[in-house]
Structures are given as C-alpha cells and as structure tokens.
Length: 304
Image (cartoon, helix red, strand yellow):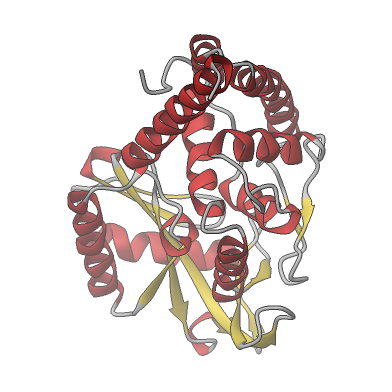
C-alpha cells in the first residue's frame, strides 16, 4: 500500500471513529430511561388512564439529556363529546391541565398548543401529555399491518388525525433499509440543531420523515457521508413542510412558524457547506481539516 493510500485509510478510520464516539454520547442513559418510566407511571396514575410513548422516545431516536417524553393519552369519545359533537380540543387540554395540576401541585404544569407539559425534574425531563381520541384503523402501504388512528389537538381548538404506530413502523422500516443508520443520523441531526446558537427550530418529526422518505442514509456510506446527504435532503426542501408520506397527518412543517422554517433553511445551508468541505478534506487524506470542518458544523461539539 502506498503512503497516500495508507494515509487516506487512516484518515477515514479516524473520522469514522469520531462519529462512533459522538453516537455513543447521544445514547440516553439507563438513569434517564428509568426516570422517564417513573414519570409516565405517575402521569398514568394521576389521570387513571394508560398512555403510550410517542415522538422520539417512541421511535427510538431520543438523545441523551435533551429529549422530552411525549405521551399519547387515550380518552374515550364519550369523555370529550358534548351535544353529539367533539368538544373543542383547547377545552379538553384545559381540563387535562387542571387534573394534572391537582396531582402535581409542586411541579409546573402548563398548556402547550397541542399538549399539557409537566415539567418534572425542574424542567430537565419535560413530559408532553397529548390527549387522543380513537378514530378507526388505517392500512398503510409498505407497512402492511393495520394501525390505530387518533384525533389529537391541532393547536387552534380543532382536531387533527395522527397514527404514531404507523409512522413509527414507517421510520423503522426505512431504518432497516438503511442498514440501521437512519435513526442514528436522526439523533445526530437533533444533536446538531441543539449545538447551534441559537438552536435550530427544526421539528424532529419532520426531519425523521424526510430521512425516511428520501433515503439519504441508504447504501454503502459512512456516517459523515450520510450526514452530508441528510443535510442536503433538508436543504432541498427550502424550509417547506413535508406532505405526510402516509397520507394521514397532512403537511408536516419543518418548524412551528414560517420564520422558524426560514431560519432552519439558512442553518442547514451553512452546515451543509462545511459538511461537504469536511468530506472533501477526508477524501484528500486531511484528518485535521476534516475534523475542523465538522467542528464548525457541530459548533465546537464534535468529539476531539
């Protein structure tokens, strides 16, 4: 093997090692997972209901120290029906907040647009409680099995359809096709958005569905190359919302506001430029420059 070839091999191995280190650091700790299990049990006892984990925790893409626990709390249709029609979802959220407030008197409980947020651990381990009403079963092409569909608050007093089980299965299937890289890259994107100052207001659900729908992690690629292709897939959307590939939840926004979506796009473009420079440097055998560029992407938080 020539000196150049040996140097290139060492460089690629070194960069790959840094990404493995980063991924190890993003795994939620057993202590965190145990705490979230206790908080779920506490919420279920307070409401006298059974909830299921959704969001990052449900899909297996949560990261250490910064992921909330999202709970889908199933309510009977009778409990939220008045005059033969579903009550406004904001009224249901208010009742849910008051019920949780009565139990967790020493813990901050507040209403969000679509959930009631219980700030366990002084806010370090927030739990978002989303009220849901069963709305039939849905058959998802490519996923195969029928999944339950629910109505949840949409943020303006009405209800919207969702099927966490269907979306979880869709992402899981895409993860298998990617060689189990997709969920790890999703974790890196979540870490990336939190590294930036200010933090990038990218919605996790949007990012994961973009990864699953566009396939940037598919093929014989390093994590560095997957990260470049993931940022490129997000950049190609120009901050636009994504039509739900399962045709259940309508448009999945990149951020909660238009200004946030524009900010996301600019942050993605900036990081994509430096990520591409990092891969070029790696292919040229320059580990120091590759590490420097990844340090810019992750705002100084790339493993050293």
